[in-house]
Length: 400
Ligand code: NAD
Ligand code: MG
Image (cartoon, rainbow, N blue to C red; front, side, top):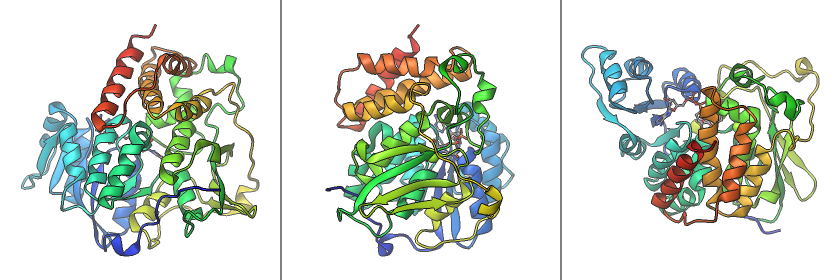
């Protein structure tokens, strides 16, 4: 079987230590985990730039601690809050908005970029990091869903390397280690926790609340990805992410529900061997793996004791109750512009659900309508991708 797997990063092409980091989405949940790793290994990592969204106060606190030369926030309100909270005698260069994020992603002073903005807003900075040849620790899966083909092309042109932070893809990266396009790979198996509503039927899902959806059983994450986990869209986005990262068609990527979130994914080879990656569900583990690759460094995560866990269970995903996974599979198969639409409408629908405007079950319904209407469109340039993203959002916002 002919497959293409992303080239293994040549150790010689990776930056040495200490590695200078630009962190985008620094004030979020991935940022919190990354700072735990950085605080534990100040000899290995330095912070060149920090970017947040609207939380200027938190970004100022982080900047006061790590003293980067550059910072970026989303708007002027956040800029004021940021500046008001900076300690006296410290004045980083402060940028505002999308151009600022892209500039921080491509800073010559940074070796590595942690791409951890949530949603499509992460696309342009991730592309900028790819064009600038950075070592990219990629948490922002939406950027690959939106325009993975453009990011891959940019990496191929510049020598940029993508290290997958997403725990499943990090597990796959480790399971694929040493194997290139050698015909030995059979399939990838993504594990899914099943989210807070695993085992529930459609009728139950119609009346679930925001608080129930945000209450993930195993992981503590930002609001958007928590809702995506509850709808199983997170696994759909991850399926597309895996196809882009490892150059596979979707029929080579399966999903199995594993409620304990201890097995983070598996790689199956033609001899029937399945290599699994196990660990505690804590994002410090994949973040540290990416940032220190090819070295491994200690992290402050409780030890995994399988005897204490007792049993690991597995089941098939229920695509009737959770159609988002199916919709993502169909979108990826339908053509390169369909995932852009899927992602945009999902973001609008999740925000509407979080704001109490629609029901949980309206999320897949809106996406299904939008994909049904969509005709394959040009996504061969970043401008075309962003235009389709914007158009899909406008259409989603006017849905009844
Ligand atoms: P979060 O909501 O906790 O944090 C998001 C960050 O992005 C914050 O710093 C926020 O200020 C910033 N941000 C929001 N909107 C922005 C905009 N328009 N422009 C610039 N910055 C903006 O989210 P998170 O849980 O940390 O997730 C971040 C990314 O990592 C997502 O793509 C998510 O899918 C992915 N991811 C997260 C986890 C996890 O455990 N949290 C695991 C795997 C992948
Ligand atoms: Mg994941």
